[in-house]
Every structure is written in structure tokens, then in C-alpha cells.
Length: 269
Image (cartoon, rainbow, N blue to C red; front, top):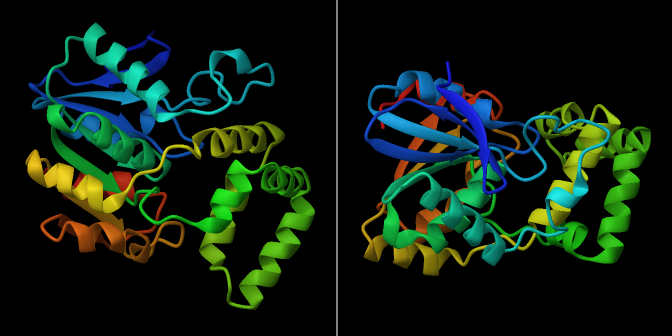
């Protein structure tokens, strides 16, 4: 069970454990800080894990009166850096490690770029943010793309028809379509996804540059993937593995949604 839940410097979090090794943990889109509860329970004696809620996530995340004013329209690197710097200062955190799953992996990579000198380890679980997808970039960062994205999210029947057609043409994996539809069931979920995707698009990294920074600062990197992951398959992480061949790679016999639990059950980091 978590030790406490709180909010500071606009970042909501759940804290697990009291050990000397400090982690900042970042969950996937549509989730919350409880995503890392399996690691919190496993590592409670050796780690202190601050599992942070991403912007637009956390308590009341699906409320229809979600306070838009709490977050800017886009989450930029300088904004995220100030937010985390305040959090680290408030909690008297010097050195730390970062773990990120799925969309949280994008935040973890950016955090590693911004705070390399203070980090010991970077743990990436099926991370987003390594391979640049031009379609995703267009849909989230341009007015035309955002209009199309909003239309698709507001017309789920049409979205399903298009997705089914792409599956039949073998241009889309069935597992990815199922995952997408599971995260878009309600209007509140669709609003959350739209706000998050369009707000997070500035959070990108240059993989070779980051790899060199991690190597120079001797930050160890562990990449954990699911063998049957249709959402963020292993191919998406190849740029990091090429740039940082010393990265520890672990592939587990699981899909995307159960990866964090399986990793906590089977791996001692």
C-alpha cells in the first residue's frame, strides 16, 4: 500500500516505500500513479518511489469539470523542468533514478535529458518517444491534424470502421485497435486523450545526443519490452539500442498493458 498521497508544485503523486534509492516513476496515458504499485510493493524496503501523475491525469481525471486552467495548452521542456526542479527541491531529493512506462517513457526520456547529471538509472518500459512518428506529430501539433484527430475521437463508429479496415488490409495490428478502443470508451476518456496528445507533442529528444549524455554521466539504462506488445513494439526502440548498445535489454513474454506488473514480478533492478 502507498505511504501517502499528496500534491506539491502542481504535481500529484503517490509515494511507495522508504528505502534509500529514490525513483521518479511515470505512468502511461490514461493511467495514474497506481500504475507503479507493483514496483512499490516489491521494492518498498530498498526504494522510495514517487509515482507522479502526468498532466491531465490523477484524481478526478475523468471528471467532466476537469480544471483546464491547472495546465497549459502545451507541456514544454522548460515547463516540465521547472515543475520537476520544484518537486525535487521540496522533497530534498539529490540524486535519483527515473522509470517510465509507455507515454511516461517520453517524459522519462525528457527528464533524463534535463537532469542527466543527477541521475543514476533510467528504466524504460515499452517507452514512447524514441521513434518519431510523422503521422502522430502532424495529428498532435498542427491545426489541421488536431481537427482530424478531434473528429476521429468524437466519431467512434467511424473510427472503428477505419480501424477495422486497416486491420483487414494488415496495416494495423488487431491488438493495437483493441487497445485504442479500450482507452476511448467514454467522452471523458476521449477528452483526456486529446488533451494529453496535443499537449505533450513538444516533449521530444534527439536520441544520439541523449545517449552520449547518458554515457558521459554513467547513467545505466534498462529497457524492458513485451514480446507480444502491439502498441509499442520492439522495433520502435531500435534507435536507442543502436545509439546505446550497452543498454540492458529485457524482453518479457507479455503484451503492453501487463508489462509493468510482469516486470515487477520477474525482475530485480
